[in-house]
Image (cartoon, rainbow, N blue to C red; front, side):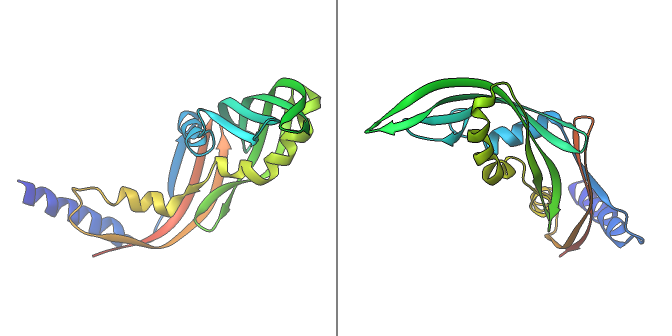
Length: 192
């Protein structure tokens, strides 16, 4: 029975790979998946993302994402103690504010990253400069999807009786609408 199942699976795979013309594939991540991706890749320090560490500090926590208007939007709480260092102490004021950051997903090779980063809203304008400095260099890491690596991982299932490699991957379209991140791509898969 298992041998028959493997033969049928192999025949279906061969037929799919041999079909011409090839049509693009699409990976769709719903908002909950993007939320997990952001939390796992960015908010790794007890649920916090530090913009500045030390006696004077600033961090984001309690993130949630939405995908709308072609952008990935991050809502978070900013907690900070900003001021001037005097010896080993920070002389300043504590600030707390809600912030909304966003970026447009773009393709770079086989990877999806964020570009056109901006601060859409900060409840307390006094902390805008602290957030702006960190956003440009670090927020792009919040969403990074290596499409080729994701496909390779899917192909490593124990019930697939062959090895496969992706020789080519071309991302043709990205969308961030209706709380879904869509990645449309074309690829060449070689099975051995």
